[in-house]
Length: 344
Image (tube, rainbow, N blue to C red; front, side):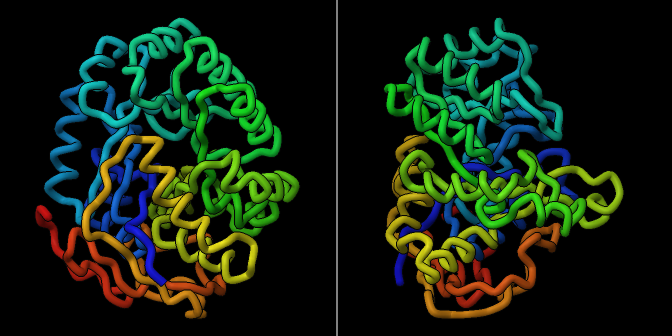
């Protein structure tokens, strides 16, 4: 089975300021091993990417160190609204944090939100961490200002149904779901302890069922929300977040092998829709090869992510990446990343 190179529009690569958790090299190795040839990385770093200067520095590092394509979001900050026109010249999208988040970014106040909605370039989406009441506010602003918004990691039945109604009424909204909200629920959170803590938190099964019902219709794409923390951090200060780059595609392939989704839906959720939403270019001569019948306990290779753990460790999966080609160059074969940092 052959698929196009996949795009993950929601990853945390921890550069700058969190390199003990992940960096551009290890994060891109994990991406390639998981079938992703392009990433969109979040701006809640230390310092956050809320100025053109800090964004430029981080993007240059990504270009120099990553093994796959990495695009960086700009971060929305009430204190740096003057930077939006400069960031809008280069960043593919803006990220707003309107609810619980672990990091230096948190946007509050209607005045700031309205200024962002009128200042950020109209042809580029505003991506929002917006849950429950915050989601309703974002959808109202999107309708009023007639501009596109993308909702990150939708987790609740009420949220996905609200987005479905907004879409039906012509609001320019797209959304994503993360694999842990599809394959885990609140019972798993109790079982996993701090290793099952993320934002949004894991929900009851009724919410999980609703996400599956809207997958590929209301829900436009699957994004890992790869948020690595070291084992020591999860055992002590317990920051929320779980890694996901190496498990996302195997989970969806496993679901397809069980008939829960069609195989045809996978490239729509992980390639076609992400590219359209964020106006990303097609990568020439780029594809991944899959053994859709391979059965194994995850992972089938040593972790590439620096944090070296997963909430899905030991889970039986069906379907594995056997080969990845990026711009004509073989970069993965049978779980082994072959390429070193260089410009393709």
